[in-house]
Length: 85
Image 1 (tube, rainbow, N blue to C red):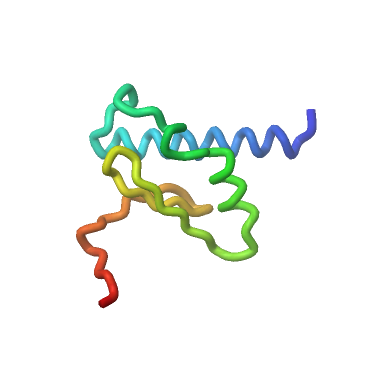
Image 2: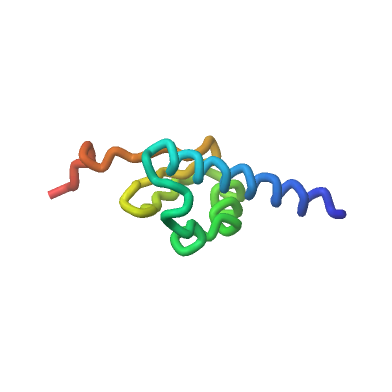
């Protein structure tokens, strides 16, 4: 097997686990949503890891706003966001 393929699969699995754990830690039971309806995890991994600079992708799953970077998954507190006028 090509090591690059297994590495990508491992990274994709790691991100998937981190996404699910973050959602569950914020009160969303795993049986209440279909993650792949909201996020293409493989494409997300490619985007975040293949960029020459820091990339942040924000997604919302069942009302939980997430920030995904090469460093991991964080919940975004949208109440603190100030929109430009």
